[in-house]
Image (tube, rainbow, N blue to C red; front, side, top):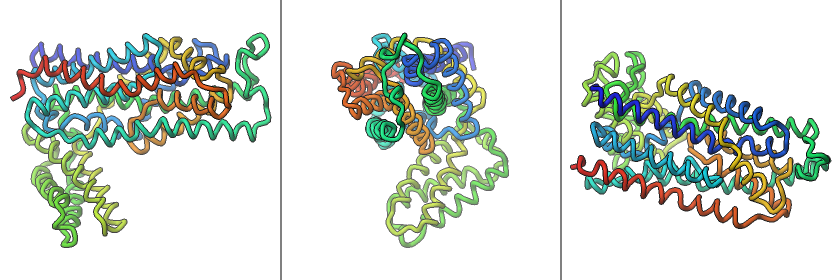
Length: 462
């Protein structure tokens, strides 16, 4: 790598970490709003604690896997990513990173709880669509729509589940002070210790869940940078040894047998999967490590793996397959994707530090919005606990499904749900602004990132 490429690589990595830093202080209020607003913890202690727990949440990815991170990487068209070298690759990354950081900063500045997930996904999709138009290639938006489902459904779940939890708390917990707003407490005293412990516990849970889910978005960005600018080191998994290759080849052959069965052999999805699997088998055979492959073959393997995994996912939906067949198809997807989907440990640690430090700044603007401007009445202790418990459980469930979700929207909608359940009323100006940000974030970031990419990289695409 020449000095210019190294400088641009460092710049892109710094901006990617900057996105995660901004994500930290943009989303801090999601975890600390209730403990600060209810005086359960002093602000300094709350944000320091949340920052440390966010750090641990990101670090947990090392043991739990990074499915969300590769959902983010997968939003870039495969042909674009494997061919994203030189100036085009650099502007692809800068278009995504600049758009995501600027939109996050803008919404934070006006104190608006907006979604970092929507921001990143919109920025990536805008670049992908623009590349497809300029390169005269079809862009498969299936992954975008698939990701969008989780982002759309999660806030509705947040609203309904938080309302139900809050009503359940009112029914089962006979402690009136749990349902009083902080300004009604004598001398603005902190809540009783049982209530404080509940709120600190939900703050901890949301912080950890936020780190494990949102941290993966930063990991995905970092890996996107490394794959595009250092393909010889990051296109395929360098940790794949001869034993792992042999195991993968064994599974590939089993899956080939399945998709070639007479009952489904006429299905075009099965035929597509079969073709891709044969190519993967050919590329893997007689190699002790994946890094032995020439760079062009590594890029080809990455493309074939991602397209084969997509085809196998469709094959699994064919009627008539047994539970064992579907289990084998799922195993096949995971085995082949492991050849190209991996995270370098230092990337996880760097993102954990950026998110953890970012969490310790900038909390005040959005805390006021969350605590006082969503409902007509101020947030009470029970409402804060119900909303944060809902956010924690929803995000943890999303982690298991490898689905990127918006912590901001889940918590905001959860608070709105508790306000509705308590018949407190909603401040429609704030709710309207949050909804506007929700609706506008995707199209605006898609348009801005696509425009930047077209103006800067358009001349490099043929």
